[in-house]
Image (cartoon, rainbow, N blue to C red; front, side, top):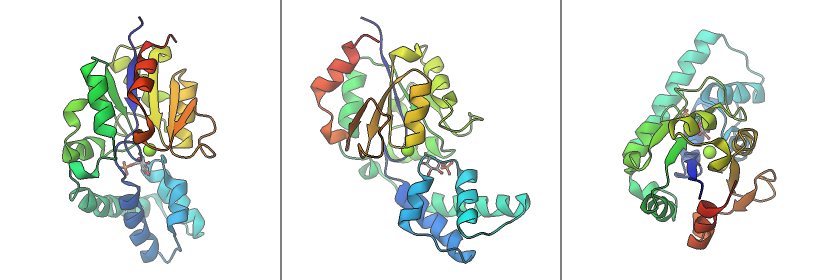
Length: 220
Ligand code: BG6
Ligand code: MG
């Protein structure tokens, strides 16, 4: 049997941090006089921090210098981190620990593949840092999803062939990145949104042990 490796996105897959990103971006948007709703926030899922700011500025037709952007990005992150500081293992999304422990008990190599520069801090706060054999985060990649760089780096760190990797993602760009990398993409969210994923589940509660066994045994 070929050894499989599993790669997980962080935000929206392992933890629901979108609400914290929203609060922090909303504060900045309010300060800048830009209207920004929770629906607008959907557009920022899976998108890098700097690109998220650019999208918000476009929404409000506001322009600023690179220096101003740097200042606002730092403010936003400081605000975001004040929410992260409150996180505990209770903030792990339902049934994620069950799936991680199942894979761990079968000695399946596991990596995190996230755009977030705060990934390690978040994993530490919720007590999952030790669960992953490798972590590739926003500090290590130069090209954002849908570029496959983050997932290819994660596979390399696990010494896994891309065709043997399974990726869990909640963002369209993340599913595209996994597909371009030649990996098996599993969407967490809505089927109508994640149309390019090989399989879609609403959440981890929907993922059965039998399905995980099937993934582990599946030939590429
Ligand atoms: C992604 C989130 O995982 O990370 C995005 O879905 C976020 O919303 C991006 O902008 C970067 O995160 P951070 O923590 O580096 O600002
Ligand atoms: Mg995500």
